[in-house]
Amino acid sequence: MARNARFDSRLAAFRVLRKVDEQGASVRGAVDRECREGRPSGPDRALLRELAAGVTRRRLSLDAIVDAFSSVKPRKIDPAVRRALRIGLYQMVYLDRIPVRAAVDTTVDLVARARRHAKGFANAVLRAVSRSLVARDERPGPRPRRALPVDKDVFAVFDRDVLPDPREDEIGHLAAAYSHPAWLVERWQAAVGSDRTLARLRAGNRRPQTFLRLRPGREETLRARFAEAGVPFAAVPDHPDCIRLEGDRRIAELPGYGEGDFVVQDLTAQSVAPMLAPAAEERILDVCAAPGGKTAHLADLTGDRALVVAADVSAGRLRLVTETVDRLKLRSVRTVVMDATRPGPLPAGSFDRVLIDAPCSNTGVLRRRVEARWRLRPEDIPDLVARQSEILAACAPLVRPGGTLLYGTCSLEEEENRQVVAAFLRRGPGFRMGDERPFELGAGDGGYAACIRKSGKR
Image 1 (spheres, rainbow, N blue to C red):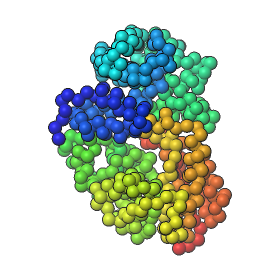
Image 2: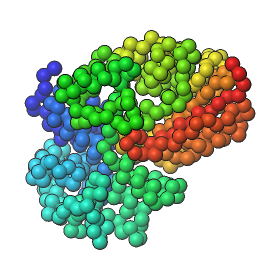
Image 3: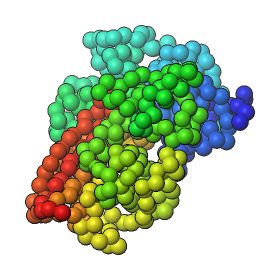
Image 4: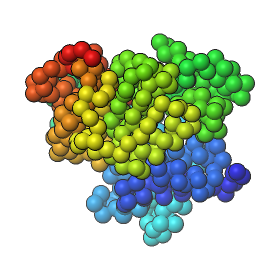
């Protein structure tokens, strides 16, 4: 397919962000659509992804800059103008490979396309920021209101205040500096303390890495094919069947994709299915299975010689599982449309192992699902806990005596994790806790997984 030499990454990013703001689209889905329709070159595609994800991730910090330099009251700034300013400021503050002049000029052009009357205002804000941005430093300096964390221990230092005073409003300062909702910062501070909260905020703003799980028996061949094709990758310590992909590459164009030699799967996700210890000839149920990464892993761990039933609430979601299974040429997987709170058609005790990948708040994957931090509300968590508890109680009877159930989430919240399992064990005699692993944000995503053993013999 021919690349489009006239593709405008910044304009495409503006369209993506508008869909995210106004239509509730996901950044990933909207970017993929732009790429399908616009056919950008590799560098243009990479810039589009960086701008769309980065601006969404850093939105609160970018708005703090806009408000600090605007002559217009924040609530009166047109949303389209603010959206364009975020794109320009992200390039100026968070990217070091784009000249400031280019960032200013292209952003003013974006504003002129959307709201021509605001062109002068946008130009004034951007040029004021460029004059005020005096340094990038490894130390925040004595004035924390003027230092915006950019990456690891690097700060963008301004000659005027852009952040709330941490002595007067610590939560507001951290929220604006690290672009997380203030209620979530406050929640984490109360739950895990200042140091771990800061670590989560920093990790939540890092660009997510792409990990590939190499399928059994294909590891060395695939590494050799990648090296021959000039695809940059790195080994992952303690994960011999995994590599980290470097750079921006289209997954479907990588060697071995069509042959089903690998699965894109985060390090934490790769750790879950082995906890269940599935074996050949067993009957295994994967609840809430889409998009199918863990389903495929369960099948691979059993040598494709078990019965793996992938269940999800809709046929549309199960199509994602089917696409993965077909590409990997797995024979042991079957799919079933099922509401996990009412798994009635499946007989009690009919599975040796059950994996529940429960719907959750996604607080362990905010760097990957970048729009999620702005859509999650405090009142959502109790609702999610109720649903998680209902799913766990409904699916537990499907485990045979002596079998194992694994409950997991991609949440960092204790209420959705250990407390859900503890409440189930108090209510459900005949089950006991097995291996339990909380996953803090690090190289991999955050989350939780716990094996629950059912008493009795087969």
